[in-house]
Amino acid sequence: MSELKRVSLIGVVADPQSYLNIIYLLLGLPLGIAYFVFLVTGVSVGFGLVVIWVGVPILALVLLGSWALCQFERVLTNTLLNEDIPRVERLDTSSKPEASLGAEERLFIGTWRRLKAHLSDRLTWTGIFYLLLRFPLGIGSFVMAVVLISVTASLLGAPAYYWVDEGIELGIWQVDVLWEALLLTLAGIPAIFVAFHLMNGTAFLSGRLARVMLGKMH
Image (tube, rainbow, N blue to C red):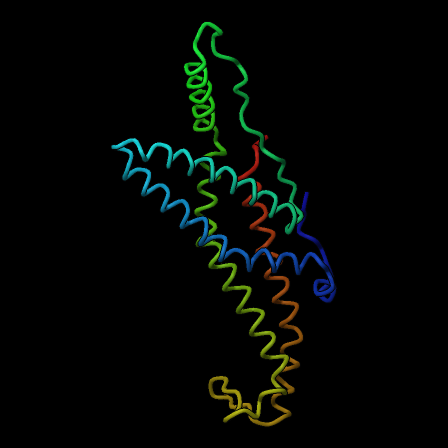
């Protein structure tokens, strides 16, 4: 089970978990878009065609796909964020229909029981809601990580490009000489640690949200 690590100001840069957290935050955007498109398209098409019954298997596939995606998210969160969300098995529907029924009737009853159990499971709906949340949260985490990384890199690398065109414009401050660029580099050093701690904190909260939405409540 992951905990928010107490690391030194400098140690956060050397901690491998910090880089796994960054990978997770950057994956938020592409995964969030993929989940959103899959769910919105599937549900829209399914309900639109339900009057001619074609929509029923489509909606069933959306439910099955969302369950599989939730399992993928569980593995991803456990692997990258060092969380401990246990594997969620399908609900037990092992009670068999009456033997006197025909094969088709037993198949129908067994399928109906599995579907009813799936629809009554809290994790079915919290999982779908979590997949939808990955879209706005993924945009936020991606933008935050990219901005922090790019701003920090720009500060640290200021001496390498301060001379381009008219220099680096920072509001009323025009950085166009080496000593000013070196001041930006000095400012970039503490910015590294601030950026890492902000991204680690965001990843920690993301892991706790996944634990609540994708894991069994005890």
